[in-house]
Image (tube, rainbow, N blue to C red):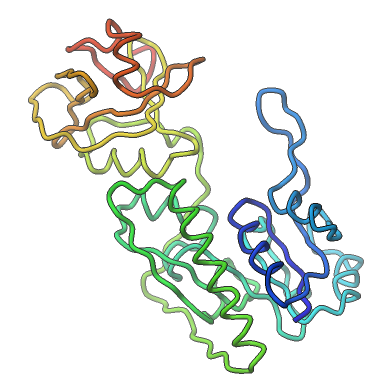
Length: 316
């Protein structure tokens, strides 16, 4: 089939790569405009744009898709279908109606659970034991269209968002090709999304990474996993910001105030919480690089001494 592809991050690039290796033809690619990022605030191109350019595909980066000119430009490609993956823009009904087979979307959740911008992170944060991908026939709503295909994937207790992104991107790409084949053969069956179990995965903010040590250990561990690689969970120790990349449930217990370092061993830093305790395994100080707990203790043991108290604000 002749395809117009719309997507932006690495997750979408994985799907685009899969299509490019198939018998389908990608006519053009739409992606978000280049944005300034990093300390130098240099313009960064999306992963999808980078991949498209290596394959000499036409790339378009409109700020929005609501104008008549854009709709006519899309129509002029005479594509059979549009594939949308983490694009970052809502498609108006006038755009959805351009293509004979409409627009299909690869979404990283088992819809209707976790509609919205951050389904992978929110699933881990909530402690879900299962997630997956949904291939959806798009309508004008926010991830509300009927389902064409779903595939499930287990979430184990050590899975971070970074690892789950990779697994779901591969699963989504496979499901996408399977769906395109069904559409070609005229064998699709759509299923309306259930009205039960609907929840929304709002965009992740940096401020959400702040750890409340009064919460149960498992809730804190879910946050740490969910916010790796962005924005990284954090706390304050002796008025210094400490980013916590990885942690595990500690076998030790403590009656100390939540957030207290109550035990050190060669490789781990044990912290009390509102229920049970956790052991820090990888962390980072401001201006430094991520270190294992063993490396951090070798370099800054005085900062992480037993009895030191993690706080929710540097002035506390």
